[in-house]
Structure formats: structure tokens, C-alpha cells
Image (tube, rainbow, N blue to C red):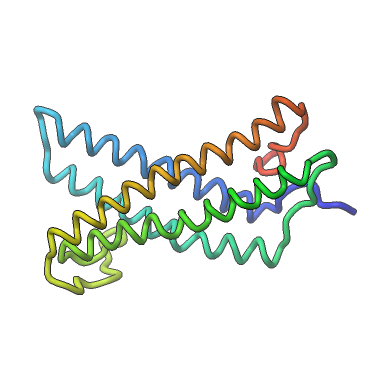
Length: 182
């Protein structure tokens, strides 16, 4: 019998990572607003960035779990009518997403380490301050982090585009394979 849907574990991990990514962007937007606002609150800004970093570390922990779960549990069969180019594009985009979901948080952690600060996960030190502060390296790491975020957004848009292309133009239920209740 053909598997037509992702298993519950993969669905849960998928949506957990999507939720964490959404929270990441909201935290950075709120922090940017607070940073520029007339009622600037440095403590709140610091706390938002600490949560942002903690969520990034959580994503780095969840991605290998999801990859292992995929490998052990397998993926659903491709639905009928999915062209070879779509399979290749989908696989390529997923590979890029997984890579970026690992490297973007690592580049953010590099900026923290370059600033001479320890890396915290919800208040617990997971990596001590390894080097003295280096403003040049901090700036470079933040630049790389920002560029990778934009690349992540582009790849994410391609991922969504491929899914909705099937749903809109092919009028199939390809996208329902990943929904929790579908």
C-alpha cells in the first residue's frame, strides 16, 4: 500500500520548525521597532534577542532529528502526475532549506561568540565566551547571517511556490500531505 502522507512525527517537526522560524522573524521585527522607538528599552531589546538566539539553537537541534526521522520513517510516495523536474526541484529546495536551517543559526551564534559573549539557551550557558570581543569579526558574522537569512527567505518562497503550483495549477491535494489533520 502506498504511503500518501507524511507520518505524524515528520508533520509535527515540520510545523514546529515553521513556527519557530515565524517566531524568529517576529522577535527581530519587534526588536527593531523597539530599537528605533522613542520609548527604547534596552533590557527588553536584549531579552528579545536572547529568545531569538534560543529559538535558533532549538532549530539547530530539531533539524537533525527531523532528518533522522525522515531517513528512518521514509517519505510518502510522490503523487501521480508529479513531473521529474518537480521532483528534482522539490528535493533540491528541501536540501537547501535543511542546509540553511542549520547554517543560519550557526552564523548567528558566530556573531555572539565574536562579540565575546557566551551563547545562552533560555538562560542556560551552552557555549562559554571563547574569544575576546572582535568588532570586525562580529560585523562580518552579522553580515553573513543577514545574507543567509535573505537566501533562506528566497528558498522558502521557492518551496511554497512549488507546493502552491501543484495546488493551484494542477488542482491536486499535494499540499495536504504535510498538514497535521489532513
